[in-house]
Structure formats: structure tokens, C-alpha cells
Length: 110
Length: 117
Image (cartoon, rainbow over all chains, first blue to last red; front, side, top):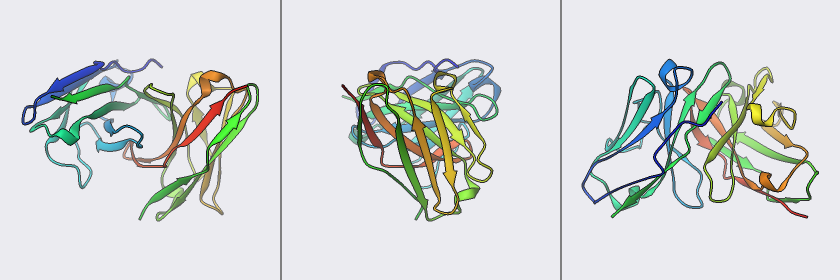
């Protein structure tokens, strides 16, 4: 199972929107609506931000949204804030009892 | 509140094995699958495998098959991950994480495993 493809880095200014892509195959991202996204600050455990492609757990700001088209899922962060600067990872179901992460994207808030 | 508490840091020599424990509390242990994820220094997250705490069934990422074993103890609400034949590339932070709707909603604090001669 190969890792999902994410851009190494993205950046944006406070108040702007950024989108992080996550490209897989029809065996993972494209085959199921089970993509989730995680935010990780340095030295901390990851935090679930989006699950089932576009659902937000309670407590996650609605500035965070998810979508999917074909084999590519996307995380959009609108109204960027300084505290959004972190690493972001996508994670997909890839068949029974199988999962795969994306390589991760570093978000810089300029 | 739901919580996963992992065992402490480990230092191992190449070729040895390590066992990391993850104790769950605040929820019904057998109702949620558990995953193990690792992160090498400066690298991304890597999925290692999954265990069903109810029946004990497991599935491991192909990369770790033959070297990893995941077990559970329902009496103590604990899952363990044992990795054998350690090499320097196994130096990483190891996390357990609870499966919720195919996402990982509760994470342990992480356990640092250092492999060094």
C-alpha cells in the first residue's frame, strides 16, 4: 500500500483560505468515503479535524472543511489563523482492516 | 473522558524487541478498534496495523508483517504492540489511536522508542 500524495508545503496569509490535496487511487481515496484529516503541532499527538470526507468532530471550527472528487480528497481552511500553522495529514480506508496515510503537508501562516 | 495512556520511553539495541502498551479508559474498550501509528524523527505518520479489541483479530501493514504483533487484554482494557528485530530505522514515536467512523479520534500521548547500539 503506497502512501497517499500530499504537497510538501502550502502557505497563506491570515484571513486567507488554503486547500491541501490528498491523492490516492480507486483502491483507497476514490473507492470509499472514509477519508479523515489530522492536524499535528510540533511535539504533539495528531488531532482529528475531519472524518468521513467532510464531517467535523465537535469542537473543530467550521473554518475547516473537507471534500472529495474522484481519487483526490481536499482539506480547506478558511479565515487562516496563526494557530493553524501545523502539519496536516490525510488518512484513508483502503479495504477491510487496511488504512493508509498521506505523506503530510506543512502549512505556514505568513 | 475517553483517554489512552501509553507506557514509557524505551531504549533498545538492534535486534531486540520492544513492547508498547496502551491502556484505555472512559469508554467501552471492546466497542472500538485500535490502531498503531508511528512517526520517525522529522518524518510523517505511518500506519502499522489494527486490532479488534473484542475478538482480538488483527491486520498489519505489509511493511511490518512478520515483525509486529498486536494483542489485547480485555480485563485491563489494554492493547499491546510488540515489534521485533529492531533496527535503527525503527527509532520513532509510537502512538495508539482509537478508530471512530474510520477516523482516529482519541490518541495516546506517544511512546518514544530509540534503537541504538
